Length: 165
Image 1 (cartoon, rainbow, N blue to C red):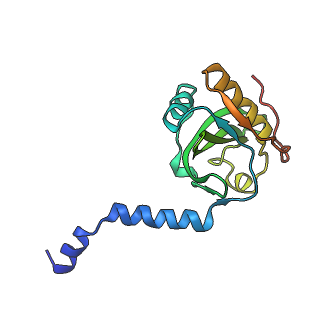
Image 2 (tube, rainbow, N blue to C red; image 1 turned 90 degrees about the vertical axis):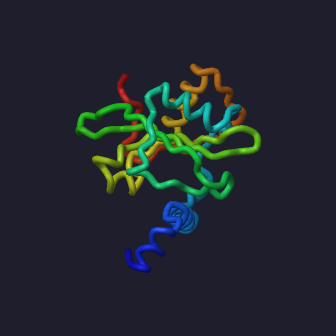
């Protein structure tokens, strides 16, 4: 083994990768403005378990972790496919979560699934915070998680509507 190979083998690659990713997130992936949120009387692990029991999953491959000016760095990112519309597009409920001293903050929204609609997803076509907040609130209520505070969501962008049940 060459000297360079031995040096490279001793580098803390995982720590370097995480440090690089954290710097990239803090620099480029900030949530602008004040997205609608729900402050829950819970913690990250319990919220994660509740979402998992309700068929949410983490999809790290297709999502960026954000930093929110008010809540800090995102610590939870889960999604659930909700419906398929007449045009053959999948819609999802997406929940981003942030640690908070008084509980746990989530920013739920309803949107086009980015796997099949990446350009529309990035352009926020079909994004609806009101639908996402409503869906998330029904999950919290059904699972005994109290919503301590809730901001008022703004309207939807073009194309989002309540999915058929």
